[in-house]
Length: 308
Image 1 (tube, rainbow, N blue to C red):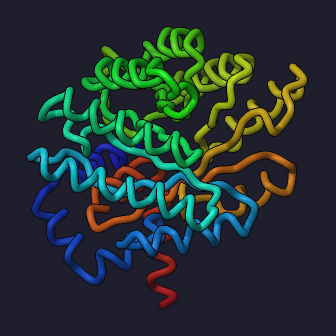
Image 2: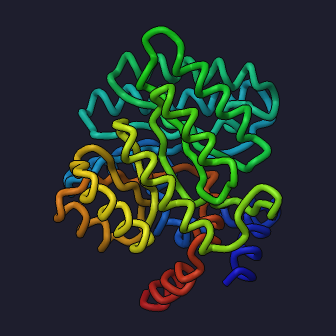
C-alpha cells in the first residue's frame, strides 16, 4: 500500500495526465464519485441533497496554485458567489479554501488580503471560512495568516484552519490555536512528507490523531474531526463519553462519496456530520490524493465502471 500511495501522489503532480484527464469524458466520469460536479449549481444541488440527509456541508472550489493575481481574484470570486448563494438558499454549508489558490506562492500579502475579504463576507452572511492546510513548507505562513485574520475586529469565530496529525509539530500548533480560540479541522494528512517533519509509520500517525482529538474535544471549542477510520471515530466517541462531552459539541467530517454507510450511521447515533464537498474543473490533483489516501477506492471505482 505505501507503494500505491507514493504512485498516486506522483501522478497527482503529472501535468500531462492532468490535462488529459480534466478534458476527457472518461476522466470526468471517474471523478464523479468524489467530486460533486463541475459547476457552482452542481455543488449547490449536492449540498441541498446532503442537507436533506441531516448532514452539514463545506464547499470547496477545486484548484491549487495560480500564476497571476487575476487568477487568484477569479478563484476568490467563486467563493464570494457561494457565500451569497448559501445564504439565499438557506443551506447548512460553509466554505473551504486553499491559500495557494488565493495566490499564496505569488504573494503572501495578496493571499492574506483575499482571505480577509472572504472572512469578512462569511461574517456578514453568518457563515464560516475554513483554510485548508497544504504541504509542510506552507504550514507556518498559513497559520500566521489565519491567526491574524481571526484576531481582526469582528472576525473571531469566522475563520478556522486544518491541522494534520502526521506532522510532529501539530501538538504545539494546536496548543497555540486553542489559546486563541481558533476552530480546527483535524485530519491525518494527504501530502508526501519527509520523515524529518512527519511520522513515517501509520501507527504513529494514528496515535497522534487520537492524542490530538483529546486536546481538541477538551478545549470547549467546536472542532471537526476529519476521518473515515473506524478506530479514530471509536476513540473520539470513547473520549467524549468518558469526559461527558455531548455529541453536539463537535462534528465528524467526511469526504463526499467516501464511506456513505458510516456517515448515515453517525447521524443515526446523534452525532453531527459535515461532508467536505469539492467541485470544479480542476479536480485531478484532489482525485489522485483521495486514491493515495485509500487505494481501496481504486477497486471500488473499477468495480462500478465494470457494472456499467
